[in-house]
Length: 152
Image (cartoon, rainbow, N blue to C red; front, side, top):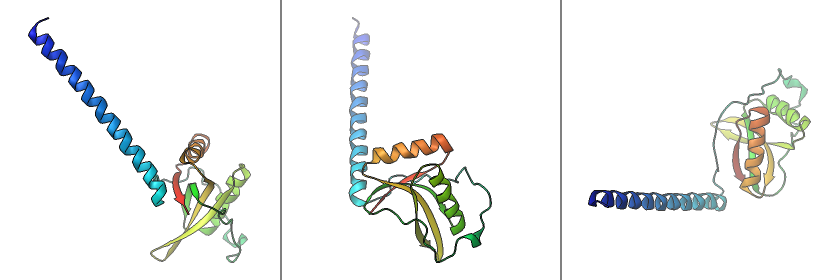
């Protein structure tokens, strides 16, 4: 074998070994980040997007303001958020829509800059894999761009 071919072969082997090592390091870092997010209750993923299934207009007067609308289940874990609405009636419409589809949705609220937002969420899962499975199902069946949060 010529010295050029030998040098080229050695360089290719070194490049392959270095590339594999780097990928293993990146995979280990990603795994540590995911494990760390559960411990710190950080948001796992934020894909903000509109809900594809908007449905018909909702009569705001049909739901009295003092009536509670689907409280979150007890406990902590991963949850799949399907929408964040400024309109309480629309959030209730989404609750009814997902309930009729066989899910157990709930609503949480958040106030940002004086504006109340109604977060429509489904499930409390112990593992990220379970939450990702529901997220994938919603995307596949209903074209919903959902995201996953860890709640306490």
